Image (cartoon, rainbow, N blue to C red; front, side, top):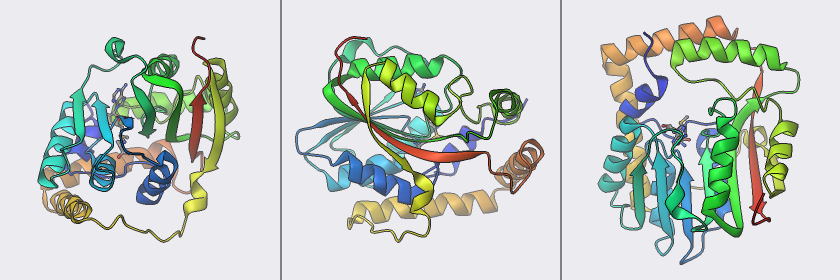
Length: 272
Ligand SMILES: C[S@@+](CC[C@H](N)C(=O)[O-])C[C@H]1O[C@@H](n2cnc3c(N)ncnc32)[C@H](O)[C@@H]1O
């Protein structure tokens, strides 16, 4: 059986595993515009790089993270501890698809980076319904997801997803809600008002302005250490070679089928 690609990234402390990487995270942080005393949730925190940035800069804001992967959870706990960025962050390991009963109306803002699009079929809608319930009225949902271009048909997206599931144990991007217009319609149907649609590609070549904190510096060190591990561990190098080989068979290099979209939506209706 193939290995889970997310376990690979967990083992190497992979950070910013989403379209336009760190630049897109800085855009998400700008949109979050964290305020003291706000409660903010990250769904799918991965190895915790974004939460480390946030918690070390916004010390009076409370952050919560949910992730469904034990490998990612352990990596994030270690990163936040190593960076002394864990004071205002609560991390929770959840079951995939778990309904978050106990936290209705408790977050001012919720964000996700490369988490929603990898939910399969109607799971995407189910997760959004859950997130809406967790959000306060007028709360904001902000995400960066890589989704299919309009030029890709639903059938082609489904075929690629099937192959990706076999090779990497996750799909490439939800095919039930294939295109950007399906995503915005779904958000509206669920009672969100879409306030911003931003194409992550426009961040190409943008210079980073790093949050100036020693915790962020330590976090970057940890990410670099993971890159060394990826290069010097024969097992991890072999795994990565297999992933890239399989990917080139599924999507021929140079063919662009997807793009990163950043969306900010407001929870405007109490019930849907
Ligand atoms: C592609 S990684 C992105 C990690 C991180 N957000 C980043 O951009 O670096 C997706 C993450 O979402 C988590 N995830 C996927 N589906 C989830 C779900 N339904 N509930 C909680 N976490 C989930 C995975 O375990 C993984 O850590």
